[in-house]
Image 1 (cartoon, helix red, strand yellow):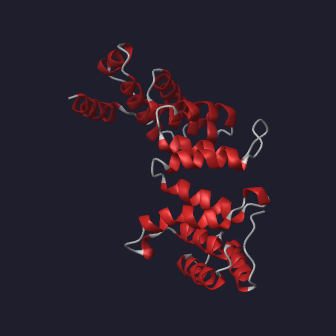
Image 2: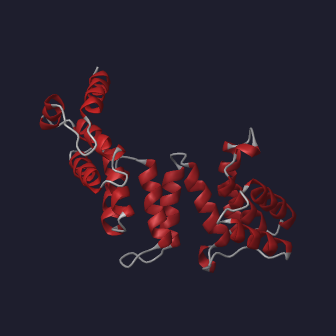
Amino acid sequence: MLKTILFLLFLSLASLAQEDSITIPQSLLDQVEKGHAESAYFIATQFDEKSVDNEKFYQQAKLWMQKSAEMGYPQAMYELAQMFDYEELENKALEWYMKASEFGHADAIYSIASIYIRGNETHPSDCLKAYQWYEKAEAKDNIVSYNDHAWSLATAPDKKCRNPERALKVFSAVSSHYSSSLDAMPLAYLDTQAAVYAAISDFNRAIKLQQKVLEGLPEDSENRRIFLERLESYKMRKSWIQQ
């Protein structure tokens, strides 16, 4: 019933939306006043959809997203954290990712791992802590977490972070997910798989996969050079170590 009401309100919002403003129906504001966090999130998404190159709408989206997050809606917590991440306010992003993770939000858990992998001024890069968060996301079958975890285990510059055999085991979940068709696997995941095989010295397989990655890339892709460098490394029987 509530979803039907929200849909009808969406139609109402769409009809009231102007180039530089959106009028929020009083009935929706009443739902927020009663403490309905999903309604606040719904309003946030309507502003967010029109926020490209529109700072006014972006700030309104952020305001309503924070209202929904503070009312306890996990998806709003996660998307608010993404906004802070986009603004490079990583400490605020981490705070809201953490809150969303308490509700078991898999993408928020993965995002926490990503912050610990790349590090920032307040939280230095910590692969072991990141791996703990990757594993929590993997417990919720977050495929991108399996991929990034395997990549770091195979290519991390710090030896204490590298474990090629573990990388192969972690990546097996990605392989299983796309077992019906290797062609369906994203090129970024194939690139990871090639790095994992190179890490365990299976260079022939690594070369074959890296060539497949390059075949799938447009000629003008900005990533082509780095993928070629990896291929040359594998041909020289060297694993790839991330710089």
